[in-house]
Length: 208
Image 1 (cartoon, rainbow, N blue to C red):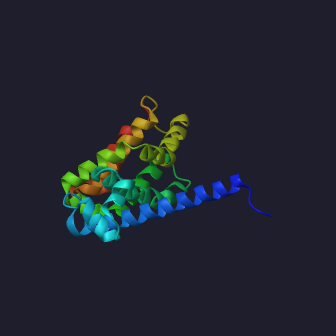
Image 2: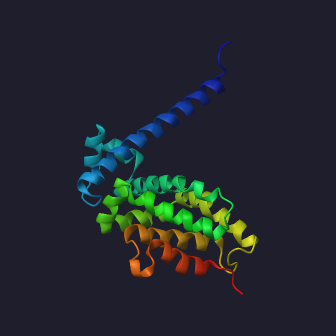
Image 3: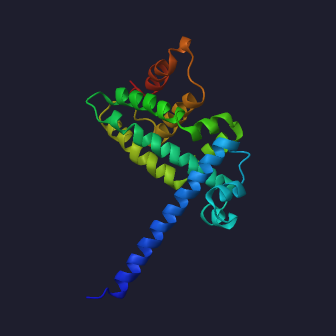
């Protein structure tokens, strides 16, 4: 039996999609290596192309601007971090205890990322990456899957405040955690754990 035309077209589209994804991953791996060597700000699209062994136009085909490439690389680190904290949510502890554990684990994972370290060392590149990533639909979708829905459930159960939207809370939880990645808390503040428990958790407690 031969494939129907629609089947062949569907298989072709799936193959093209997989090839595009593989090409993107190769370019992102090349970009990550360049960021480690040269820093995000000094890395040019031509550097990434040479590292990947492709023409510069290929890089622009997948990433139209340098900021788009940097944001995609940053999102990969954030996605890896979100995946790395997933086990923190699989406990019987109260939501806020799970949140602190997830934030602490997330800072550890991010700090051990070579790409994140190169971004932290390059303040201009870090700011551009964060702003671009925060504004992307992909990041909002991943944040919704990882945190917003859990905040909605916790709010409905009365475990956290209900006067602010879960989207707003999620955005600021990420910002607080990210600030700890770039600048760890001082011992006199109780370290990262102290800041999270005494400031972040306190701000999320239900309003009386």
